[in-house]
Image (tube, rainbow, N blue to C red; front, side, top):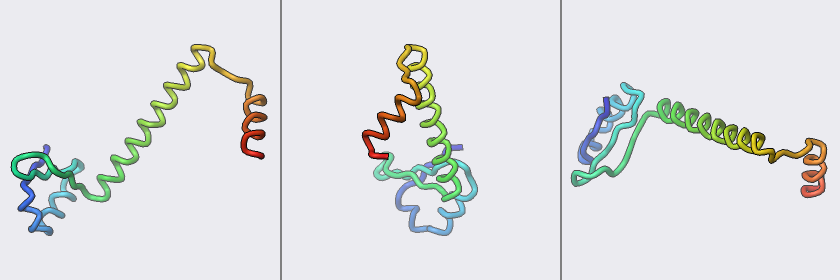
Length: 89
């Protein structure tokens, strides 16, 4: 369940830490009734980071698949030769 707390509650750091570690979701902090910040445990952050990395990889794979379907491909040896010339490998 989404948790939203006012910024003044951040003074209770032990309680906030407990809240962060008791959920796998970020906790939203409001200031003057508007969203201001998001906090989470390191474990939750790492989980979200891995998820974002996975989504980025899937996105890149989808773009590559579209290139293949559209015929935008290059011979592997030709491609390696171009990279070698460009970067002096």
